[in-house]
Length: 402
Image 1: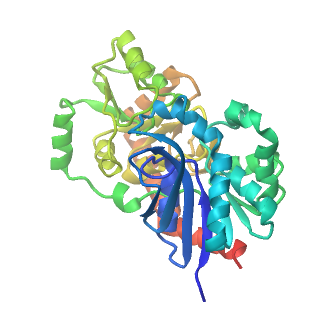
Image 2 (image 1 turned 135 degrees about the vertical axis):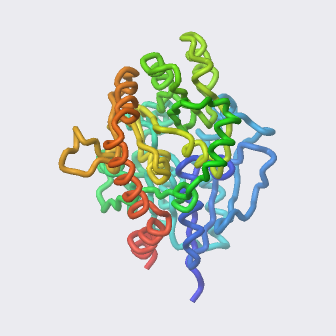
Image 3 (image 1 turned 90 degrees about the horizontal axis):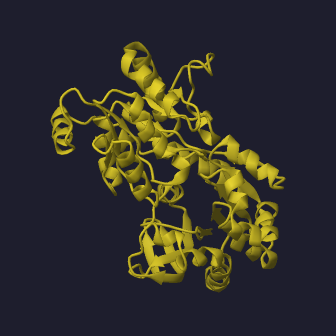
């Protein structure tokens, strides 16, 4: 019996890697009885128009330029390629279907679902899976001008979806609020337990601390986050003002807010304590976690938050805000007294609250040990990619591809 074929729509794909793109790679690499094709934007002219990446054949469309930066992707003209993705992807999908004869469509995030919904106007019998991985708040998403311009098409995504898979209860509720009337499967993202759960030797930690300019007695907060507005990294920098000077902030990662964040650190005389490291390969991130004492991201919104669970798997206690999908896995001893604690919640847009929670974890060894043990156990038992891929196979693909 020939393998089933699934066509995926995604605004971006590797090497432009966020949580959604990594999820696609991790899931498809573990499912070998389905042929996956993917249509995405090219962005970078160095990338081939067609290539095999893992278990996916990637087709890239749209305008591109040589080696664009993260800031370039947010500006004219590359931003316009996102606006017109619905139509360039639809055209490519129709042409591919003539020879590939797809058994199902899969859209990674709601905006990428527009070409899938339009495709179903002609091929109504092909099932359409919509995965919601949005990290921005629902208010932010629906107020974007590119969404407002094509609001009827955007609503069509939810009305035409055969099945919605959401990475958090929060996003599942979003689908229902947008007019989706079918079943919702809440299946979270996973983390690479083998990578983030491995022990980093004391000699490696010592070498990294030396290379980072850390002195004996220095304590570290780490945030492995894209430097974007929704992650509120400026609040962590501001929190340093209420913490002892031996407490440093490590920021491996890049993003359009980096220049602004550097200015904030400089303005308050925190440049020596707020350390920017630029892009760091994901395989190196566990080392930054290993030399740190607390992970913090005071998000303004979060669809799920893989970085939090990665820190939990690495044995680093987490401080976060109670927004979006974070509340699915982070339980605060004060806010969730009936559950075993897996982290601490700080207030949104409140640097003093961040400082208080960080200090609590640094000074209360018993609480810290309890949180670390519970969080590590939860990460290993519920959020490993082998389990997530199995759930996707059994609860999603086996349902929509009969």
